[in-house]
Image 1 (cartoon, rainbow, N blue to C red):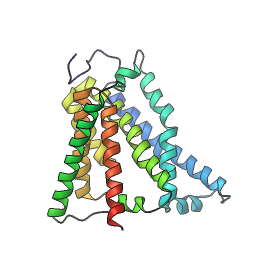
Image 2 (cartoon, one colour):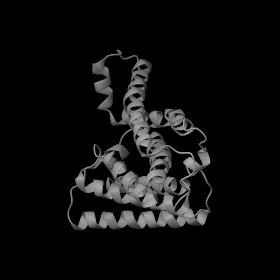
Image 3 (cartoon, one colour):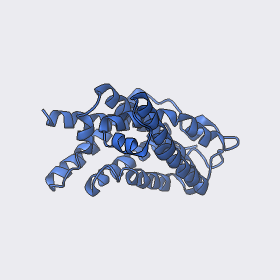
Image 4 (cartoon, rainbow, N blue to C red):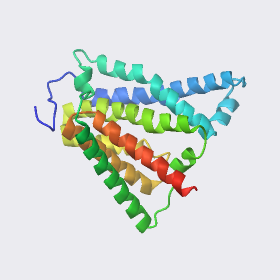
Length: 243
């Protein structure tokens, strides 16, 4: 076993079943769970349980942060089902649930910061427009919910899906480098509704960095840490600019 592959003989879903499970995951989390959480929030606020109430709630960025946090946490059993439904699978192998030294984590986080700074400098130099999506999120709602949703939950659960489940399945069928590339493209596309075309390039670069770290370290904790640092720095930058 080398640093680039955990081996193709491990029990993981192949390419097509990985895609099927991912589509199912999207439908379950972005539709079913999201609507269920919104209805729960409406019921708690004693609002009428109807379509107009849901439309009203989704226009509130503070509510969306709460929904994002709760949906991520509630998706944990579904991620476990995706992994263990494959006979003979191992959570540790499938999700790269392995420890790694703090120094390696810090090194990869520094590389991620350098890449983010370089993309930001290029963004500014070329005068590309910004969507201000992260800035809007940073300025509303509870700071605690913001940190939990964007800096803690999103990195953990997004990495479990992209650099854990999807990477594992794609690597088994296609090899390590194609798995890095494909998961990075899908990762960027999943953020298309949040950012403009220029910022999606940043998301693609981030995805490649996270995939590269997953491939080289064989530990999902490294991309989780990198993702958390990237999101935290984005929030901090917008808060400083808003002063």
